[in-house]
Image 1: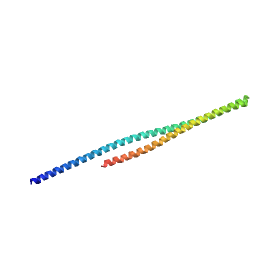
Image 2: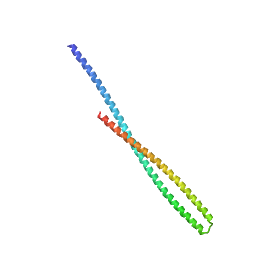
Image 3: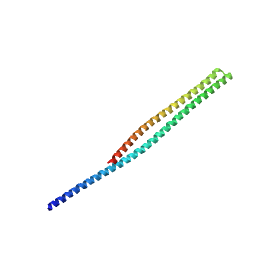
Length: 170
């Protein structure tokens, strides 16, 4: 009977040890899961922060794009006004020269100079317009890249949410 009692006690000790090992294993698993959830929450917060930053950068790019488009429009209007002013001035000078009976050659020479100046101004304005258009294209490309980043960030955010929901189910 003593042997039976010892055998029962030994089995209880073994069962208690196995139970304790299982409890420790489960405690480690819970701790690992908690750590994974903490990391996922941190990554989710970081993803949300980056998404906000990307949204702000996208908004700034859109504002810059609008500003450049407005500046381009204003420069085009200024070019047209200057061309009209110079054309009127040129016509006025030609009339003035003709009325004063100045030699036609001198009037044509001055008119040619004015035309050359107007052509140079038009060329300079065209260069400025091209430069602004190039800058606008660069900003629009940057905006498209930001849109892509925004899409990727949202996708990562959605995946992190799904991972967190999956971790919560465990």
